[in-house]
Length: 260
Length: 348
Image (cartoon, chains in turn blue, yellow):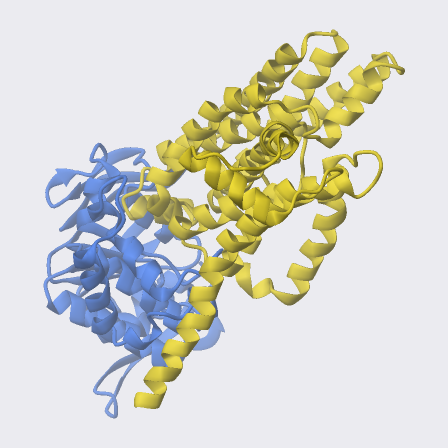
């Protein structure tokens, strides 16, 4: 469980958010929606303990995050960054093994058990065939799946994913969203952000709408995501319609914008 | 099925097996060639016999002249080349990983500039050789300590980039001091000595020099070896590595200190030898991949072998000794361009 209590976050001199309260419970996928510059990434960094809170606190399984050793945090809390270019051609298996860092001794290398966990993480995401491929030579979608596998190799209880579907094609987006729903169903706390409100309908248990460093609303997608709230969030006209073919609501924006 | 299996085994033998043996093999060949060749040629078989006799303690049955040439003249120089090349290459491999940049060489944080200023100052003040070496060593460490202190004081999103930029600035500043001393130095005695030092040479290196820097080199190597798996994690984005549970700040500080110690120790007895520390880690990465556990030994062997080979050319290609820095750049730059064009895959 990951919790923010009266959290002020941002950088010294430039606070980005104030008084934010948020709880991601076990077995829950929480999606953060918000326009560019809403402070989503900074919030995530603060929740991961990478950025010190300006005020308030972050609790990981009930314990204050700030003050825990990095290693201890990484055993419970994993981060999936946006798929990125790598600097050196490590194999996919090596990249996933890096997820074991918090469970491998300082002077040690991963052992057979670590390899088995990494292998299982690859198998879970059905990308075992990539194991010996250089990370530098696989596609963006595959990289995102590899980074999720690396996070799973940490054997965490909470997962924080910063725009895991950015830069992915339609099929890979669907694959990643299905993994998010599946991981939450297995009991993990999953916190993710996206620029496509549809993704919240597809796999989030709860949605938090964020703008200017504040939460406008939080709750079940059906309750929170209306054309009025999303319109206010993004500053464009938004229609929410039910589509029979996919059996859920979808969100469409009109070309008209209105003043913020 | 069976054919596919056989094919994959054959592939493994040619690609991994041969590649893994290439570095140690070339090292042995270059060492023997370097002991054999020179103004007084010795048969390669006699070298093997002499080394075997030296190892087992049995008499070699070789003429005393040959024994003297091998043990007193050539071996100290070959060992010095091995150690210095290995140290520069190991430091280069570590720095390239630490700074996530394959274009980084061991002098990225100003260690060479600091060592140069120390040595040049020592020569200018007409200090004894040992003091010049000590000044070079201390100058190298002090320059990097200064760069690191500046890098730590500046608050930034990317601490690695700040370090590199601070290194560039301090390096330029120290370079200016070196130039100033050069204009003040006596043009007949001191200036040639300064120029010679700045181009690197092993001609004056003694067994005592080698023994005096060996502890510092080993001290630098130890953390690199012990932290070899964790080193891989430092090549990730800083925040990513921290999220994986790595204390990047402490780890980076230890590894920078280790690589700096090795480089300063090497440069203090040989002068500035460029390119080896930039180039040989690339060759090693192309051979064994980026995993530091395999990259470190491969870099050490290739770096040692390379400098032994280059030093052989330096002392035997012409009537006068060619400065090492001239050769490493003269051979290194074209080879680097070749790698860039042909084997860019190795570091992408």
